[in-house]
Length: 203
Image (cartoon, rainbow, N blue to C red; front, top):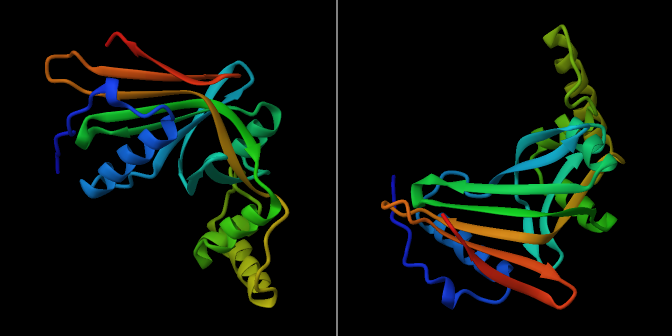
């Protein structure tokens, strides 16, 4: 389903990009966009960018929240370099949002709540501690999952030590809305010590 984006007047945009983001996200949800919370998380791996699609778990005054295993490739990259870019792309409504900033580990309680809110299958897979590692025999996965499920059954409320929830503190947020005549609207917010400022960008 393709839905037209509503009228967007950058001159009427709020001072805080968080408010505008929530408005755009709610519009995407109401328009039936498939997995509107899915975002590309780009990190730095050596001299190369590294991207993976993850799910936005929450958004508040601390930033945009997601979680990964510290032993995964993405977790290792964040531990070495917390610089991160989040990209949301909703072609059905002709919009995308890019958020650049720094990933900061959430307090332990937030991390625990994130893990415990996940499905049993997701918890078991995370508990194997094997994400991104190579394997040769599917039986390895079956065996590791069985062990993980047993651990979860024996210890309800268990949260693996390597599970980390992050909040991305943004310093740049760009909103992009498509235009059939290629006069796309681009509004970029930048944060400094005084707070947020915004400017229009050429398409």
